[in-house]
Image (cartoon, rainbow over all chains, first blue to last red; front, top):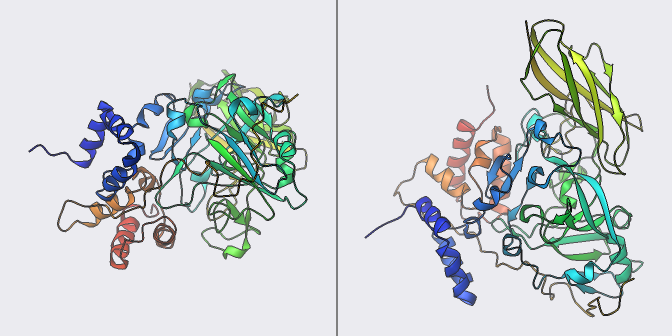
Length: 411
Length: 104
């Protein structure tokens, strides 16, 4: 009798496609079939065909493939508008079948809770609201986690879990107004079609009603002019500008308006929370001292040159990148090639719109051969600058330490 | 303008009764079956962690004992890996600290 190891089994089934056909044919029995296989350690079944989705992001540095999490090297993020193929992916569970199959049939967005007229909108109905198109920086709350010392738990994002694509959708506030907010409405709770890991609660986060009613907060159905890619939330996601990426729920299908702060697994404890005060690196403050991480801090990225590039001494180097500031605006970006002793100004191009990233550039020269680091440091309109060392928190959120890019000078 | 007919208004939807609950059934995480009779710490760790997520996620981290203990606590209490017995937890944490502990 032929036997398969677990890995051979999954590979075989993934290639043949028989597996999914089998499940589809099972209909109501599929769940039971799934559970049986789960019990024998043969699952996670939903992962079997996620490998194909990775081909939509060929340059992505994959941190994990179950669930898919990946970022892009800074030099791949040089575009002013990030192409969809280079937008990072932070998944908490498996990609919904609807997204894999690009199938909008049967999708609805339910809006309920503290509203006078609960809604269930089809995609067509959603698109009847006035459309808005804007470029928006979306950044995973854990971007920069790998730079925390001592290391903290979680996906080890370096710098590339950030992007600024063009999003088209409708204002969340228009939809909430249609539903009629009650005076008791204080917070949103977002839900999507993705299946959580293990026995975790469905991934769900929310935002204060004031942020939900901001004119820039969108329910998006297009990314860079076409339908959302499967990995970025097809058919519909939230785009909550300036705030950590988890607020921008992917595969969105339900918004519950609440009369209290949302209290899901991902809103409480240590999830997406930072200490209310500075803590000693490596320490773990009590839960009650943790507060919800919201807006991003001033930050910049060097997108040219590429790390470890070599330049002849005296040669002019085109240095450039982006800068963004959460709820603020970027005032200035300075660069240094001597570990912060001397700083040079850069030419700043203002963002295309509020919440898009700004662009900066300058020309630098390395005096002689040797090891150099190009440092970039951004300043916002409120007097904040990027820190030289990363302030620490136990889950590694909101990392915004300056970008240090190693380059070599040659003779 | 939004036409009345274009908007499907549904009245009286209560939380938990809509069709917009997670569409795929969430399988309870069951204990993986390991082929070997007496699996070593490496097999135990890899198989148990991989029951839910890529082992890559584990391999990328360098955490001290207190943090691996914290991770284990969350997996057992919040993410459905309650079948990891206390003795197995100790074996796995020791293995993690040895192989994925802080770089010296």
